[in-house]
Image 1 (spheres, rainbow, N blue to C red):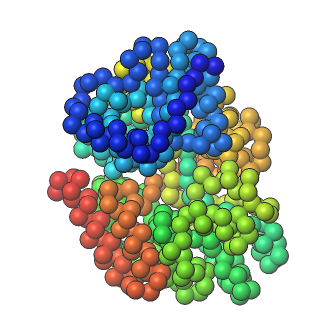
Image 2 (image 1 turned 60 degrees about the vertical axis):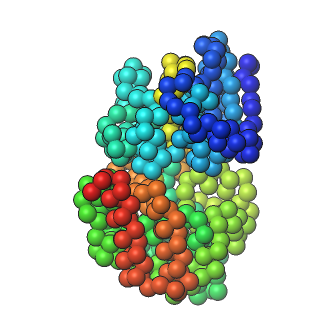
Image 3 (image 1 turned 90 degrees about the vertical axis):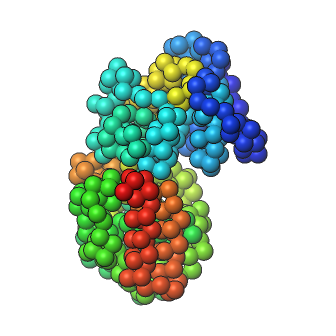
Length: 432
């Protein structure tokens, strides 16, 4: 295999980006060699995507005769310096990038990403992606997702669901809940037994995703379109968000969530669940591979009861910088990642492929994971993520939910603050 693997350090990457801040677009990035594809992504070698993409690189090199120059970056390296590096002659030919208005949409609106409309027509990727997955691939001139041209292609999906400890459920005589009332009854059974049922993290994304999931249980697609796509005003004192805030307070009051979660990060939440410290974790499908490797008990998953929708979307995007030198090679590589053999590798290693043949997925846990995802697709149930609407809303949502859990604010006051912050951020994007 001709692939060259380069592991970039954070210090070197940031320093390079700083030196390039003054460079202007049009310089021609990527590899200067027309037979070399310069590729960046931030997936670990042992993750489902890392395994599948290593095979895609091998297939690409065999079929094209070109060499892949792969550089492993961290998510934070790419996120924090993308605008500077992509606006320079140091841009790769293709990279993995986060989806949404504040990320891929922002770069598209700045002219830093290539329009992929012609490649989509040539390869037929639009036939492979469900509408709710394609939403995060298209951006208008303002960088708002859902319409306009194609600027990225995902080849996997992700969504929030319920991970549960089968052994702990059996010890308490609890069946897998099929309604929300049954879910609350399960939480209370654990609490009555002196067990805090939910592993949670308030210092990072998980608590905000639980809040959003509770709102989605009362919502419909029009609410999501208003919240995420700015198609209408969002009533932050309306029934969906009021229900979510009141329920989150109830979770704390009932002992279903510990007040200590305000200082806990996602990694600690995951290890708590995987070590048997809590019987339930409401979080993303991206945990499945690790849970399979590290859980000390038999486990399973189910969709959040009583809700037709869940936080989720297509996965991160393959994007092609406008400055890329070898765009044709880049789109050829994307197409290889959409092939059944690569999609099946994602599915059989704990990921959620967008177009695998279910008959080729052999692992029972993976089958369950993919079946739940397909159920959401059939319902048009992917509702994206609560922090997506504005570049600053992630930190604001984390702070608001932390304050609610630790008792320093009320549900009503939290919603008032978040509503003001949300509207201010959306106005900045839309120019209204």
